[in-house]
Length: 229
Image (cartoon, rainbow, N blue to C red; front, top):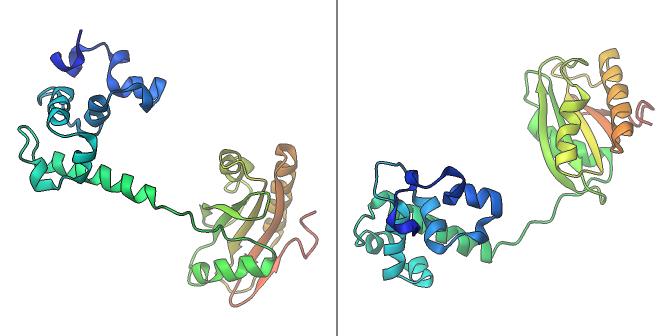
């Protein structure tokens, strides 16, 4: 049964292009099927893979990548929206060819963390708890807001902090939160949360390097204070 002679909804669900892509990867699909996944907008329309087969009978992949929206709209069945989708996909592909990843920012000291985070946190009216996830070279892999509101052990739970650490394959984490009062002195709750997270990191093999509290123009490192060991 040729896929371009049937409707998508007539194909068993597990054999539809999108499901095969998820199961076996995009390399398992034909050009028409890949394009069909991009353009598909609803079952009431013409079988989208049939449409894509017709597009690819008129244009090679190279020609299609260079065609503008007006030219694409000359193909029967390709309206403005589908033409824009095609143009957008190929523009992304071109940008990928010249993409150069920016160097990751490296953290060497609590002062580096303060310089990075203070501009983002100095105007905050509520406490915001942020985690930096680092690689083995102390370069930032990800920055994530874990919670907003008064810091306590029930809100900042180890699973919330270390979930992303595991997903990012982080070697270590640095925790930061602000004190809207302007005084960065650690509270009893700050210390308890820190100790709990340090123990959680040890169980998972992820180092908690520091917990930094940011106030008004100054900060406190709980590692320097002896609470992160």
